[in-house]
Length: 288
Image (cartoon, rainbow, N blue to C red; front, top):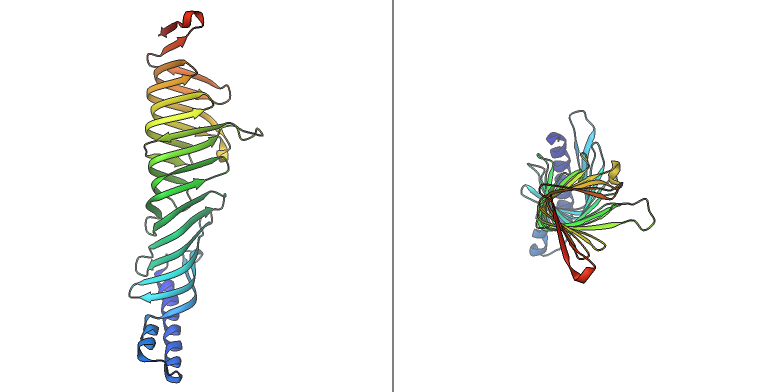
């Protein structure tokens, strides 16, 4: 971030606002109480830009209005963009910029949209420019073509290439998006949940439950591996206190691996199968 260029733009905007106020003071008969409001240097049509060391635009922030108060600029109707390996757009009803650090706090109807089309919505968001990290303690909803994730609390890269949902996680994933109706699996966990679009993985922790049709799978931890561009699931690995329920039958193990292509589950770690048989409503148990 080129702070010199930022400060030049800020000083120019502040000077412009002061000049407008001075002209109005000389010609207006506005009462003193109303004139003092102009000292806050409120301007219309705000634009702030930042550049990298190579001189290329790194980001810009636009607002309908801007109030200058000390080291902070408060904007209305924020529309910001980050230009890096991938363009990211960010909008909110209100935003506050720290002129020294470049950090930004956004409030009300906050939305991040990546160039790939992934979106994140929340009520408030803090953007740390130095660490290039966005965080919130509020509820969040992340949507992509084949996945929806919601939960409470998040820290992520601005482009959402990697994100961590803190707690109360619910995810809906289309495991076979190429089919007309697809196959939706719903996964819940106490959290946290990690999404890494570079490694094409999603990891769920603590009290994980996955359901699809009449099949339910429980585990301490679940790792989901995706196809390129997150277009479907390749496999799911469940670790710790694994329990699979289908109809009246239950299976237990320490580890289970589900392969989407074959729709087969491989169990390891003292697997045990409990089945309800048709004869006299008997129950059979098989262990290894």
